[in-house]
Image (tube, rainbow, N blue to C red; front, side):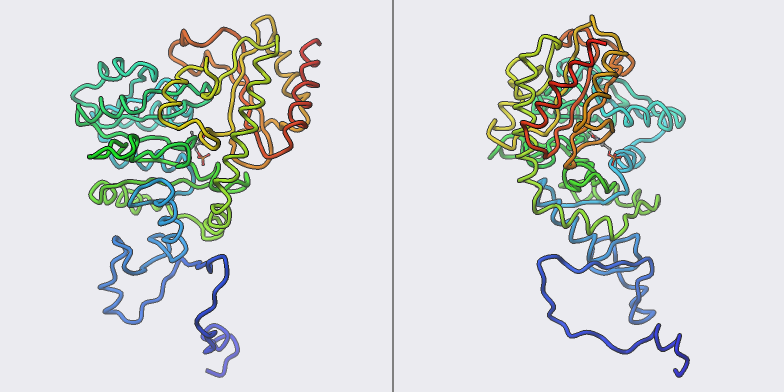
Length: 402
Ligand SMILES: *Cc1c(COP(=O)(O)O)cnc(C)c1O
């Protein structure tokens, strides 16, 4: 091998073993090399005993999967290129033509859009249930219902459901439950052990997490996970994952591995600041309602308190407000634009505070009786100083006077 290109590609040097550092090494691969053809034929990727192809796992992805299982209390994990891809993987794996899926009326918007688009097109029907009434959920479960989505707290309006009762209802009907656990993040409550010490455990069958939010913590990574505590269910989800080619890039996994150790501290800080700002918002005459599960008059507060043990770090950094109906959409938009630290943008979980006005009427099948009339604005509280954020909200209120 005298040719320089060949020598550089097949260079014989290997560094000494035994390198240790706080962060794990990062393995990047589409191609994975086998020691022999026999090995190629015998290696099994499904149980993580070997490596066969980048899409099927590397030491880097296995490591993040195991850490996420520890975070959420599950046993098996899949990584996907976004939180929405994780939601789609669950739907495409478990639902067939003629089946029905139920989702809460306050479900994550793009999850609803998936049901109204692809799922409907493939003959899979969906219905929305009242997240605050388990009797409504029970009544809507029919012979074709194969999957029930759960969300605690609900997207944008942050009602906290009676998650334990919802899970009991689904179990009684023999229907699988999938929780969008992005808000709780594995920190506010344990999705597979909703009642500590209960035997058998009371928990969801599947926990989906948009790692894009708190696990990433930077606003710069898209990733999702699907966690289970049942090998057969995991295998079913995993085969769909394999057939659809839902791989993730090692650089992104590395970013999440780097952020994960600080996640609980960050979550706590986001939580503390969001609660203080939400309480401050309750004193403002411009607002008719403030939605945050830790506020005693927020919908489902009692369920949150019972499930999440209300100490620090038991709620995410999100809250929403409803402006008095006397304000026009233009005035609300001017308020959002006048904010200097809260930037206009989707998503959450990063260091920068964000704001989004939502047209709630178009997002719900019915306007829930527990929500006051008016325009809703959601805040995602970042890691800036609390006093600066409060001052920003105060100065932006003047824009309502235009
Ligand atoms: C952001 C989010 C998702 C989707 O995550 P992406 O990575 O943006 O696709 C799903 N569910 C909830 C509740 C979210 O907030």
